[in-house]
Length: 80
Image 1 (cartoon, one colour):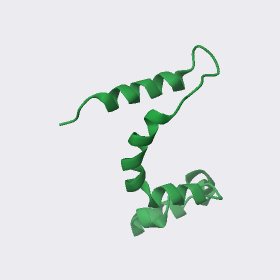
Image 2 (cartoon, one colour; image 1 turned 120 degrees about the horizontal axis):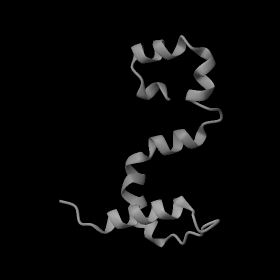
Image 3 (tube, helix red, strand yellow; image 1 turned 30 degrees about the vertical axis):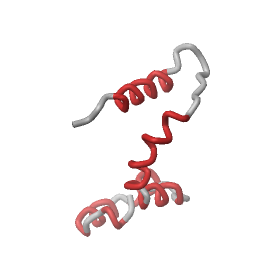
């Protein structure tokens, strides 16, 4: 968790447990920073990019492919 996202009280609470810092924010965390700072842009672009992906399964019971199909079905339904 970046200090940008936490209030002073929340930061104080988490610093009481230094052994959890690696669990809360693994190092290096460049990818977390990258996506955190660009979330609004990604939120707009990923739905446009997702239909172009061709995904392959490791086996017939791959739940990841079924999850992506659910997301694609939801994308096809018009919103209000």
